[in-house]
Structure formats: C-alpha cells, structure tokens
Length: 109
Image 1 (spheres, rainbow, N blue to C red):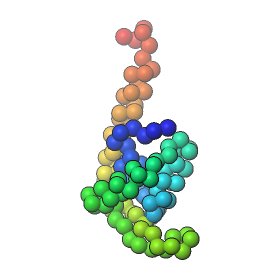
Image 2 (cartoon, rainbow, N blue to C red):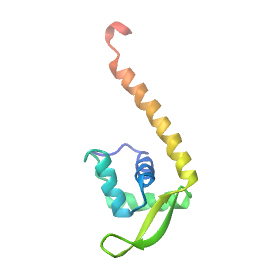
Image 3 (cartoon, one colour):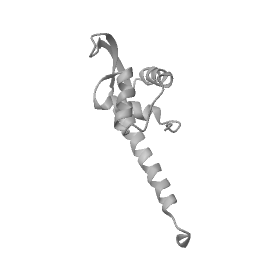
C-alpha cells in the first residue's frame, strides 16, 4: 500500500519517537507498526530524514548498529515531539471527518 502524500514525515517522527533508530531501522519500524501494510522506498526515506534533521525535528548521532557497523541513529527533538503531537491531532481530526462522511447514508442527507 502506498502512503498518502504528506504522511511520510509523520510516520518517521512516530517511528523515531519509540526509540532511536538508524535509517533502515526506520523503514522496518514503519512496516512493523503498520501491520506490514506500509513499505517505504529507501529513495523516499533518506531525503525525508535529511529534511527532518535540517528542520531540527530529529537529531542524528553516529553509533554502532546491531551488526557492529557505524550507523546514523535518529532521535526526536523537543520540536519534533511537538510536531508529532500536532500532526497526529490533525490526522485524527481529518480521518474522523472522512470516516463520518463515508458513514453517511442517503436517509441522513
């Protein structure tokens, strides 16, 4: 399943809010927390990570990965936590509105 435009940043912020992750770990976490429904292409992920780091919503630190290779691990900043909270609230409002619209029957209009 493809993600909706504008949701990749939200998914990345959510993934790194759970624990520090390296780039490939972010892909795996998004796939895991979406019930295997979302598979983010690496070509989309790394520019988004760079953008979020540049916006100071995430920070990166080099550290050894599970296989003892140096990897850049991403964590959420305070600004990133605020953005995640705001974006989540907005997404929840939007999805509730769409759900309400789709539940509407001809008798209700």
